[in-house]
Image 1 (cartoon, rainbow, N blue to C red):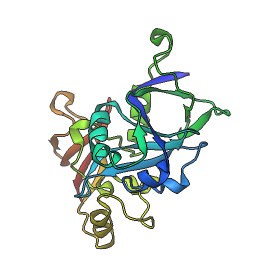
Image 2: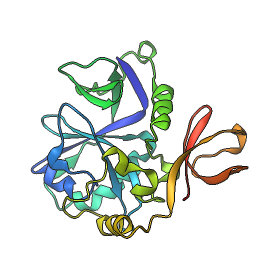
Image 3: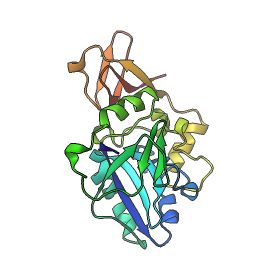
Image 4: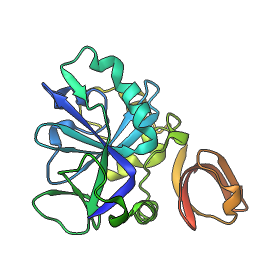
Length: 235
């Protein structure tokens, strides 16, 4: 078992949690599973992604795996609506543990990685559990899969981050916050910026959430790896 320290899991529990969440995320929560993690995004009224990650069923709750820097932003996003619901978001964040092998207690996350569903509420001898954050980060970049951090929150449509390519956006489900803007941008071809990989030529000049310019183009950096990153650039 490995610790994915970049990520945290929130748990949404209560009456009709699936139905509640359906109105605030881009995926179809009726299709959530215990066996596989479903990509999702949460958007502002303007259709900009404030947080994204993966959702799965945990038996008594829905697990929401997001980057640790967006936890408070996501809490603030749901807070006004939770007051009028019968759902609760757990007060603390769980650490996320992953493994290379699948078994009855795991759910498929991304290629080669499975999330451990029975997550401890505190680190399990942290020094003895390897942190695979850099490894997963590199793999996400190679697959053009963005995991939004706080520096990039609320700035891009899901299509600008290629989230629809990974099944995070269901265009046939019912309404959700920001849905009108997201759908209109897609069906009217209004998205003029796209996600692309770029090589990092000057590591000290690249900053997450900032524009990076080089000889062969420029874009706003949304993920950073050791030698390459992902940016949102004009088509």
